[in-house]
Length: 511
Image 1 (cartoon, helix red, strand yellow):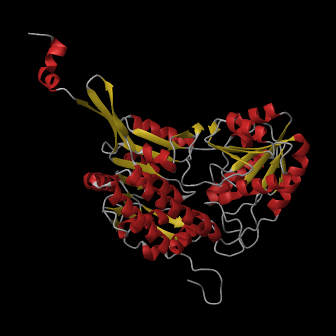
Image 2 (image 1 turned 135 degrees about the horizontal axis):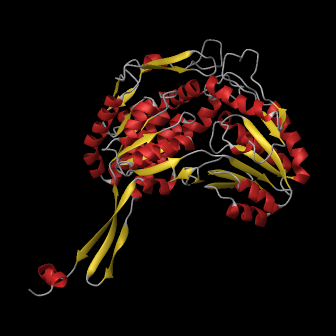
Image 3 (image 1 turned 180 degrees about the horizontal axis):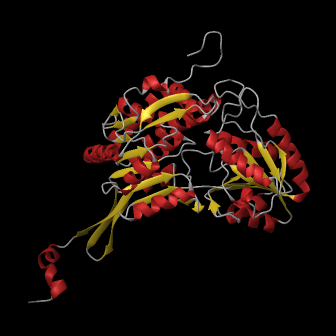
């Protein structure tokens, strides 16, 4: 829909669409029972978007019960039946793409062109991928590995999955958690961030409208402390999948361990951007700005530490600063906007704190401030380039999660790779070089779950996403992710009738 005389679409009518509540349990919207409300705020304007009742522990219990009730029938469905349902789901998502794009832009402050061209199409593609993958859940062929016995391996769904998704990519992270779980025959209870519940709720509604049975997908929107911890600790939840900070991930692991749950953790990142002296410096500078500013820097794979070999260092800093200064901040719904606000004023102030402290030990080349014009009421922060910070400083070592890139020089290839690995994190990285051997060495020696060469940030449904070290374990997307949501069973047949009758003699001897 368009406003009269304007190219800017109407904002998503969240209060109207979720008048029945912001919990989705057993196939319908309901109100939370915690006795407390939460307000979703448009980070671009500071205006209220949705006031809703938060989920309490009773809501989590109801959602888990709905998922548990739906599990036997969904697990028993054939791969073809689950695949058909997911194909219908992808079609419904495509029909409602504009709704999803506007809702995601409204709650996150993402430019509408980003949600239209990246978040929503990526989610539809993920759904189509797992629709196909549902038909390819395979064990191993039968074989005789022990005398007269035949063995084979079954892959089976594990049960009710409890997942917690972050606020930076609410739609995509919901999809990354829900799709492989249900494609494998599991049912799920997802807790989105209370800041950004809109698209997770739309996602569950679309699934129901596509014919996925009630209870297969449930959404509880509450706080991490109450709803999140109760979900992770629930005795009927057999697996926990969490995406978020490393600090919270440690708490999730602690709670899940008490009931011996399977864990899938995608945690923080501090991606190095390694530029060798034979790289195309113009391409590298463009890649650094795109990689650092994607989603206003609120991306755990964002380029945050650029290490540039000394012959290119000054030119890289100059080019990158000029590109950052050309980035257009603005209303996420305006066609010309390149960069939207951060998720909240709290997050903006956190990012500003990192930059302000860095002024005492590094050089802020450009940015480092909030706009004081028509955007002043939103959670905006200008793209920021920091140079010459010490390797052990907080802007180099800590996850800032904002539109901030730190640039440091290095001399030898050995030093560049060592500095790239000098972090507790290991989610993503990139290497920039025209020398295939140099680039190949970097991909081999950098300790990260994904290493791009002469690019930074693209992802595809067919390939895995997940980290090393403090960035967690387990994979999202791809067939690797699909297998995460299954358990393996060894089945063994005794092929001799005598052994079936007289097995006790083998164990106990003649009596």
